Length: 119
Image (cartoon, rainbow, N blue to C red; front, side, top):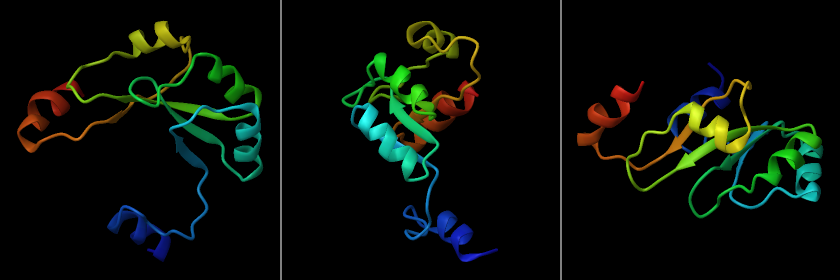
């Protein structure tokens, strides 16, 4: 196993010298930002569907027009189950396969009741 792999598994920062192909953006993706990301080798952009950094529906067009892909992130401070159907309807992603990325600081006592049962 090479350094980049074990560093990524061992610490949250991984290998800071490793170039990534995906990023998580808390700010609006403009055409200029999308071009910069694409020119720097990024292929996939994570954008929030909820919370303080919520993506605007028009951003999807900007992301796709610049040859990038998107992964939706559902952020909440409350435990709430959200379905892929709900996201498809609300964000126009129907017919496109996608995974919901969840951002939630969960307590150990809630893992079995809310996380494992969801999957």
